[in-house]
Length: 390
Figure (tube, one colour):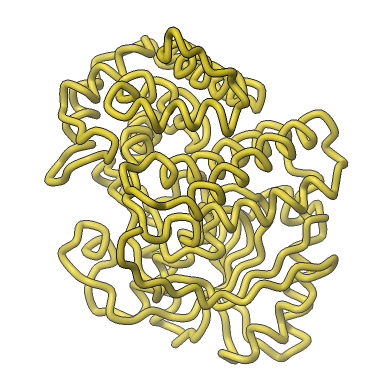
């Protein structure tokens, strides 16, 4: 195990109707709030919008809104939110939704407390020194952003999606978790969320670090739990017990606890981010094709790790005469799991028929940084990962 520092101050409230406590929770921090949400049919049709605003108004909290958040959250909307916060001297940002909403809220919280343009923090021209407090009501178990210190924003002016910005300033002070809110999430979105949370565990698990048995076993158990509950929910959308498990799994997968003291990979996320930004593909769907292709590319650099993954996560029988068959079966079972959750097999299934951007995506992936841990990937490696999917 390697040296580490770890801080996870988010307070979790997990219960039916947890969202009804939002007014009292926000009141602890501010008398006004920026309410960030999708503004879609679910918010209004489910009654969640009214439940949230009624709870806030009951505490005499002045509410300003930032709606129309989209997947791959956009910088232009973040800047709009920053402007609202500064104009009205807002003291708290409330995110109600999934990862895109929460990441938008975090980026707004940074910009509201700085005289710099918020994009400077994502391009590493500036370091986060302060941010407004953020709270979250999570409606889609997926990214774990409701408990992490990270955020990803898409620059819709320059078509850039950069590495996550990471800082404990950005961890929400509370996360209200009502699993009933996830019942009406469409099957496709549910599946993409399951792939996303699984990927967060896998990126931490794929490591060259030694003597990390505690987090190894935590990762393996968590991936197995996501697989089991994922199939339960896809086959029976009303399975509230499994939805509750997935709600917590998404948080544990990305709040940092399973990555303590170990090197992590994160190449697949960097490579998939380019697909998302260049072709407007949802995060989970992009990961569903990139991760298996990445695994085929790099497994030879740490066969022991991939054999352990195949055997302990997907229960593959060890072939002592051909260890590569054990690895390949593990990758194939992972690929089948992604497909069963609604993932894709290749570019064609993603609707990509033009491969002219592959070189550009590879260049943008490795721009001014190294990518990966199992193998430090170069441009040629990444091009091959993309081209395997044509």
